[in-house]
Length: 152
Image (tube, rainbow, N blue to C red; front, top):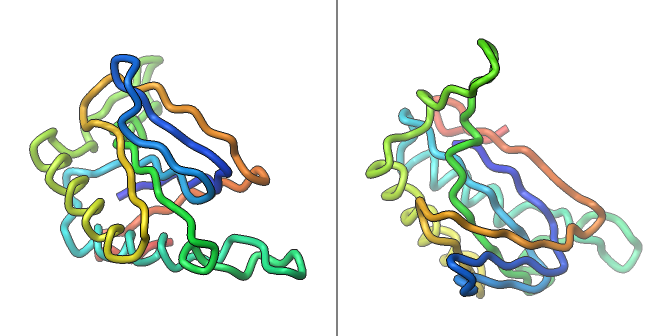
């Protein structure tokens, strides 16, 4: 599982011009699912994200979690995070999870996030989405789970 996480002051996603998900302060999570991913990997990734302390406290130190600031999460599926560009000029996506499996883990990941955060919004799996965000900081992290589901 691969995630690009951005701390945002606002983010929204649209499908066919209609907003499908929108948050204020919180995290925009671009989520890529690999063919080898499991529910255990999704559990660990959701737990890691929801417990990250990357919001500033009263002293300006990144010491507060999503729950501490009452933030939301906007999750957008993005199979292109598994693009392999080593050979040629056209990316290969063979490491990305097959749509049925990837969608199941995407939905599972959303449910896991809902156990931690008050507001969890999402895009539409497999759709052509337009994502808008105001990156706060900017503060962007790349997280990846290994074959055991451990996030790094």
